[in-house]
Image (cartoon, rainbow, N blue to C red; front, side, top):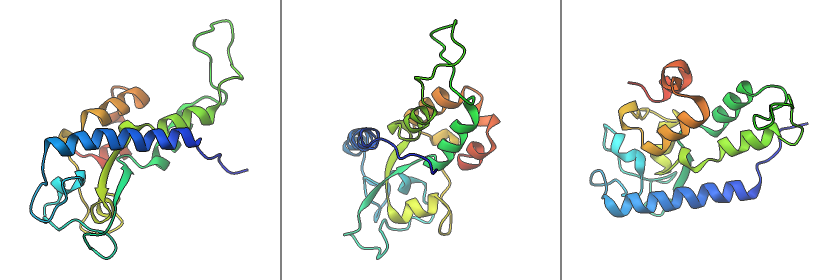
Length: 171
């Protein structure tokens, strides 16, 4: 049996949350440089100052909502952290709570909008290291909402303790 799909409510909440936060960001700031789109959060980290775009590098290409930490990486990390059956921390008499579903917890983390941003396809692919040169987002530039997400799900020492996280956002 494959992994279950996330409930539509979670994916829609991710879209709504990212859109609302990014709309606010775009109205406060402009494009990072000529050729960059104001809505592309990743453009500010492009040392080559390549223009924003998509497959055909045209202005008509769509912006993409993206997970700053890949969704699959979040799912794998949360899966590894959870016990076989989640413990009910609110009921000390019960060791295991059958009402808690491991996948509900994983999906809540994977689709948390604090782990989201908007970028053009070109910069998104470079950030995910699917094309070169790769985009590097230094840890000091990580937005507050992502820092809160990491703290809430992975703990205070996560930036140092999780090699995959330190690799994604280097010092």
